[in-house]
Length: 76
Image (cartoon, rainbow, N blue to C red; front, side):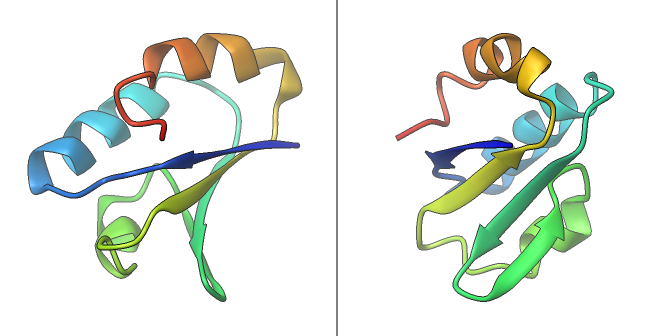
C-alpha cells in the first residue's frame, strides 16, 4: 500500500475525484484523523472533514503510478 495527500475542497473536486478512481479496479481509502472511508464513495467522502488534507491509500502498488498521474490536480 502507498499513500499520497490530497485536497478535495469543493463539491466539483469530489465528483471529479470519484469519477477518476472509480475507473480503476484497485481499492482506495481516504482517511483523516481516525476516520477511513472508501474513496469511491461520494457519501463516504462527504462524511469527512474536507477542510483538511486527506490521505489517499492506494492498495494496489501496480496502479500507483497511473492513479497518481490522473490525480495530479488533487495531490498536495
